[in-house]
Image (tube, rainbow, N blue to C red; front, side, top):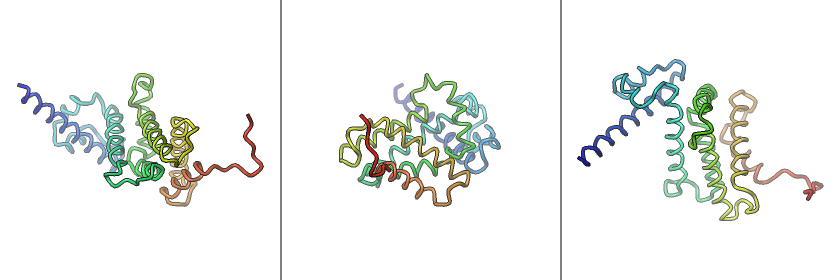
Length: 205
């Protein structure tokens, strides 16, 4: 019985993964608005009704996509998977990977935040919070090896990096920056970590 249940659960997980992968590919290739639930089901090789066994609406698949992509991002940041040994280097890789993800296309990003906003106080897996936690974890690792000062709050530093990332991303998508996006993001991290106070600046107590 346990073996049958385990097999059933594995099949459910596989179907869910196919739905997520199918939706991601369609959203990337033809946009969110032009993609139908029926097309997502076809891409996953399941009946249209099966989609609704997993997600109530097309919009409801977006938070699940964000969670799925963040788990993949966490795996990509492991040094044993080829990520840089430097935590700051991993932060730069992380931002570049997020910037390349179809989910941060401005149009799709608006749909994603519209889907999660009504539940922002109840969901601990809100994409923005999850990204902030992942950044803060990398900041802590950078502090442990001396790449970032240890007298600053990692949550605050992670939040600042996240805010700058989305600002630079929107500016780039709007055509205000004429440098490659990865270079822009790396330069932003370097500027933040180097600081930009002049010689006459004095920190007030």
